[in-house]
Image (cartoon, rainbow, N blue to C red):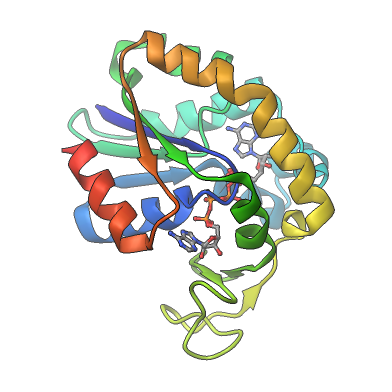
Amino acid sequence: MNISVFLGAPGSGKGTQAKKLAQSYGYVHFSTGDMLRAAIQAGSEVGLQAKGFIDRGDLVPDGVMISIIESALAGLSKDARVLLDGFPRTVPQAQALDSKNHTAVTRALFFKIPEPILITRLTGRRTCRKCGESFHVIFLPPKTQGICDRCGGELFQRTDDMEEVVVRRLEVFKGQNERLMDYFRNRRCLFEVDADRPVDEVQGSLLRMLS
Ligand code: AP5
């Protein structure tokens, strides 16, 4: 399997890019955040376990996350090209992927962006309830306010995009990120992309790195 992982702070654009690459270039995309939100909506056991952590802006325990991603990858063919968005977030999660030959990480792409921009991006984000597409009230507004351009679904603000939770998520990210970057640096598979540019420019850089 060819597995690329998207690393970066909340709001750095990982989900926006991964969705576009999956729609246009045939990548299989897994967003652990989307999977957890779907589990919460379905009222499943995983959802019940995860909800408190997400609402506080904390990480869901590694054991839960590793088993979610292992089950998702288990159903794929050997020649699948996979984008993982939001996983791994800790060194034990990265080690779990690398511990099996067929799920070892091919490349890790880090979305580099100045912190002040992240708060504006996250607090202005609106997400489609139906298809998960992400918009922004200023940077990427929908054609009709409150309605998804892609599927016509209703747009809403994620509860963890409130400013106080955003601040906690950024702290949690900073607590893990250096160790995770060092892990992939030592594996010699880390690339950095300047994520503080228009969506299409970032995508062009990612496509070059992925090829
Ligand atoms: P998750 O949903 O993964 O949140 P995140 O990593 O914090 O990432 P975001 O979705 O907030 O940001 P993004 O980088 O995808 O940005 P986006 O493209 O949307 O996780 C949520 C929670 O689940 C976590 O806090 C944790 O509790 C739990 N969790 C998930 N995975 C876990 C794991 N592996 N281990 C433990 N816990 C886990 O863009 C943001 C905004 O900016 C949007 O409005 C977008 O339209 C706009 N935008 C994007 N790109 C651009 C651009 N180039 N220019 C201008 N605006 C842009």
